Image (tube, rainbow, N blue to C red; front, side, top):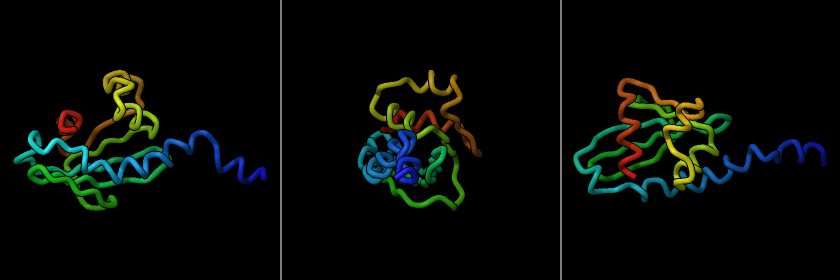
Amino acid sequence: MALLDELWTPAIYPLLALDGVMVLLPDYLNRQRTAGLHVAYELRFRGGPRYRLQVDDGTATLTGAGRPVDCWVMADPAVFLLLGYGRVSRRSQVLRGRMLAGGRKPWLALAASEAA
């Protein structure tokens, strides 16, 4: 029982919810705002998986990470969920170091938040 308690800590709950959110992520894309956009993102979650989000002319595809991307975004899983639900501001989380962006074109992280 102690092993089960150790595995099911509160820190794992956002990671479990994240799996379901990531499946739906391409459907949240604003197709009008992303028309003509061709960009690849890598979403990195501390203590969890990495995903690659490819946006091509208003259509998004989610796959596993590994191929080259234009921009990567690293975030705490709970922060990513709260940001997606509009419960926290991106600026406050960046200032606290809970969310970072990088890659060849890090400014694309700003475009991603406006495309949803």
